[in-house]
Every structure is written in C-alpha cells, then in structure tokens.
Image (cartoon, rainbow, N blue to C red; front, side, top):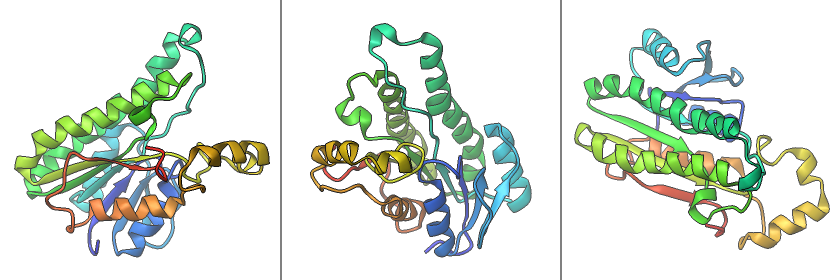
Length: 231
C-alpha cells in the first residue's frame, strides 16, 4: 500500500508515533522519523527545526510523499483565571506554529511532484471541549481549523490533508503506565467512553496509513475522531 513511499513522522517517540512508524514501515514505506527509534524500514532525521527537517529529508531522499505531523504537547490542567499566558503561547507554538511551518516547507516539493499526503494528529478535545483544559483544546482546535483551510488551498495541486483526532488512546504521552494502573482513574475514564475501553495506538496508525496512501485521493479536509464514541 505504501511501497517506495517516503513518509516523514514528527515527534515519532511520542503520542502515536511509535505505532505509526511500525505500521507504515510494515506497508513498505521508507519512514523517516523526527526523533523516535530506528528499526526495519525506519531511519532517523537529526534536524529539530521544521524547515531544516524537511530540507534534510529532501536532500536524502529527493521527495516527501506523505507528512505525518504527530505533534504532542502536555495537556495542562488549569481554570482560565489561573492559566499562564506563557503556557498558552507555548501550546500554540507547539501545536499550531510548528506544524504550520513544517507543512509550509514541505508543500513546494509536493506541488512539484504533483501529489502529496499530509496527516495532522490532533485531538478530539476541541470537538467537545474539556473543562479546565481550555489552553490545550484551543491549540488543538487551531490544528483542526488549519486542516480545513489548507485542504481548500492544496486540493488543486492533488495534495490531500486530513486530521486524525484521537482521545482515550493508549500511549505513554497522555496515558502513561502509572495512570493505566490506577483502577479508580481507569474506572472513571471508561465511564466516559461509550466503547468501554481505551483505543489501541495501532488503530490510529492504520487510519493514518489509509490517509497517507494512494487509496485516499479524493478525501481531504476531514477531521476524523478516533475516540470510541466520545466525540
């Protein structure tokens, strides 16, 4: 499904990055990870700035067929009157400005190639809202809005961009092992999820694989919640 495709994954050791790298490599892609761990079909990029990262991949491989913006940032809990402006700025920088710069650098090469896939891994939080997590939900909502606008801009160039909006997915970034081992916390969480279980990161990765493949040529601008019915 992804044979000979060059796929870039940001922050690949966080959020759903490890499972996504493994699944995409399993489908035959050449996976270049910003951070992460090397493995079969997976190499690492050294650059940390978004523009430098894209330039490094293009220099090494000559193209980018799919870009997975798997950007993570802590979901800081704070009532609005206690929220720190600097914390909000950091959230916006990490979840909006950084991926926007990344996409802006990758798009010219995709336009030249006549095709491209972009997948933003955002969150289901802004689809319902989360009390006391307004900074995080606001920043994630900006990512979802970015996808909507850029889909209209990029569709004439055969570039599709979609967002995966997860919640309640097993991953060490937002649901670390110590939380999963807390029976009281788990019971409360499962009470909020219609599916009555946490999602598996592989379930998110398989959806990303579809959006990164040639099977997704006429789907763009969508924000797809993967949250067991929560959103």
